[in-house]
Length: 227
Image (tube, rainbow, N blue to C red; front, top):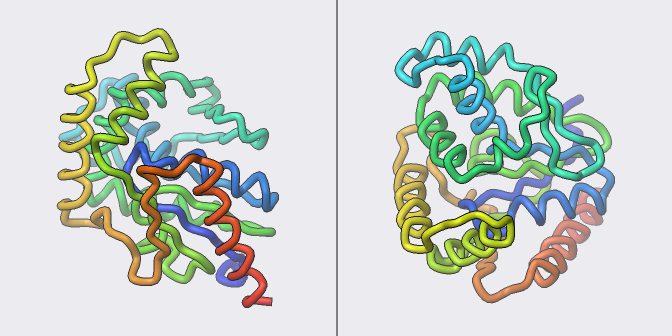
């Protein structure tokens, strides 16, 4: 039954616009939305709250399997962890770096893979992540991989944080992004690479609306062919 439920996967590194595009697409289609990166951030945040070391694999896995997660159905980005609203904490830049470390642990990826597949429910799912099209939903109806230069992604993140009133260093952001790319692309399990059948879109010089127009057009074509 689940394999007959359509899935659209949108993979790529942070700062490419994939989270925004995924949210827009799920809202446009009226489908469920999976922010898989948030799950890894939640493990990192939750482990820190409970004082669990990343070297304590068994306790990390137990937490990943037991944590109660609720994504908002209003597409406003709100997330609850074990009944607590943690959206702001999960979106902090430091949480992204910690999530990348957690995501490199094979046992954690295996534990969260099971949880991610449960999001595949009628009428369909838009899944945002790094290995959605290659590992979690290899049979997805349509796959996208968004890219952008590290410099452009650092600039985007810099503007976001400055607009929030935070003091940030552009060079440090760029170095963090490059380090995260290196770690994600070269990890032994589920490295960050496009699926062979993914539509690769470089968003460096495109607006969000321009990217969304491309993604929606390709998606609708795929849906038409599948009916």
